[in-house]
Structures are given as C-alpha cells and as structure tokens.
Image 1: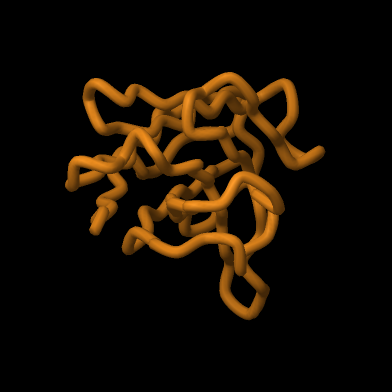
Image 2: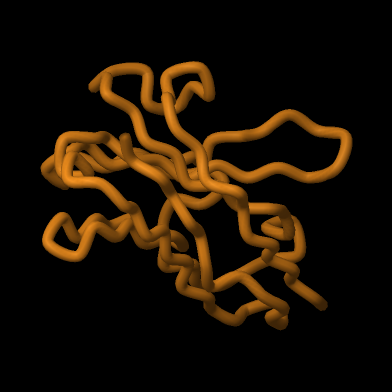
Length: 124
C-alpha cells in the first residue's frame, strides 16, 4: 500500500513559482500513475496534471498548460509539480493521488490513493 504526503505549499505573489512535492511510501510507487488535483471551498476537486507510471506521458488541464510541469522520480518515490507564472485563480488546496489504472487520469474516480493536501495561496 502506498501512502502519500504533500509538501511545498505556501503563500506566493502572482507571477511567482512554487514546487510541490508528494512523497510516497511503499515499494510499488513506480507502478502507479500519479496526478495532481486542486480544490477550493464549495467547488469540486479538479484535475491539474497527471503522469503515467514510467513518466513517458503527461497530461495537463488547459488552465495550467505551459505554466505547470509534472514529473515523477521513481528512485526517490517522489512526485513533483513545478508551478510557474502563478495566478490568483491557482489558489487552492493541492492533492496528489495515485492510480493503478492507465486511462482516465483526469478523473477523480480513477485514483485509488490520496494525500492530505497542501495549501497554495497566490496573492496579487
């Protein structure tokens, strides 16, 4: 069983950058596709980015394409989300998630495991 712990959130000015990390415990991390989602109060959790188990393919929401980069280091059991050119609308709690499947990676229901979330706040 893989457990996920996010870190790296915080307060940043618009236009700035943050690097989120998701540390995974368990020996089977490399077998999982991974994703980042975000959620604001009163709204559903929304897809941000995903990466297949071997890192060959990545997927992004249109709202973050060109600004965010997802990566996965299987040797370190860590998932990353590099966020650049941050906007106020990126403010949310960010969650990492792990999926045994290889399709439907933009859907919340595809994922089997979730972290506890890390707050990202972008100020103007």
